[in-house]
Image (tube, rainbow, N blue to C red; front, top):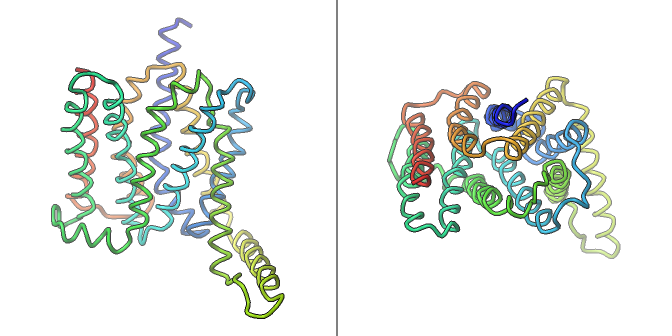
Length: 328
C-alpha cells in the first residue's frame, strides 16, 4: 500500500472515532439511569479498560515519556471523570443533551489555546470570532425555546450548576490535553494505559460518595467510629452487589456498548493521529456536537426545539470558523 493510501486509510479510521463518540452522551445517560450516577461510569470504564487491553494492547511503558504519562494521564482521568459525572448528575435526559453541548466546546477551546501558544501574529484575534459564535450557540441551546432569554438560561444552570461546571472544566482539560501533550508523547499512545486509572478514579468517587450516603460517619461513644465504619463499608458492598445482580442483561449490554463506543473511539482517534491527517480529522471533529445531539435525542427520546438545533449548528459553525482563521 502506498504511503498516501495508508495515510488516507488511517484518517478514515480516525474519523470513525467521531461516529463512536457521538453515541457516548446518550449511552452514558442510559447506563447512569440503570446503575446510578456514580456506579455507571466506573462500570463503563472498567469494561472499556478490559476491551482496550484485549484489542489495543499498549506498547511497553519503558517507551513512554514520564512527563507524558503524568500530565497526559492526569488530564485524561480528570476529563473522563468530569464528563461522566456531569451526564450522570443531569436532572433530566433533556439536560444531559444540553451538558453534552457544553462539553463539545472543546474544539473551540482547543483552537483558542493552540492560537495562544503558537506565537503567530494575530492568531488569537483570528480565533475569537469563531469562539463567540460557538459560545452563542451554547447560550441559545441552554435557553431552549426561550432562545436568548438570559433569565431562562440562568435558571437552567442555577437549578443544577454542578454538571454544567464539570462539563466546562472537562472541555478545558481536553483542550489542554489535545494541544500540550502531543509534543510530550514522542509517538507513544497512552490510551490503554490511561483507561484503568480513569476506572480507578471513578470507583473511588463511587465508594466515597456511597459511603457518605449510607452513614459511615463517627459515633459519639468509644469504639463506635470503627463499628460505624465497618457497617458503612458493609452497607456499601451490599448495595453494590444488590445493584449489580438486579440489573438486567439489557442493562449490561448497554454497559458493554457504551464502553466499546468510548474505548473504540479513543483507539481509532489515536491511530488516526499517529498515521493519518490530523488536519482532516480536526475539521471532521467539529461535526461531533451536532452528531452527539442527534444521537442523544434518538437514544433518550428527547424532542429538541428549533432554538436548540440552531444552537448546535452555531457551535459547529463557530468551531469551523476558528479552524479557517487558524489556517490564515
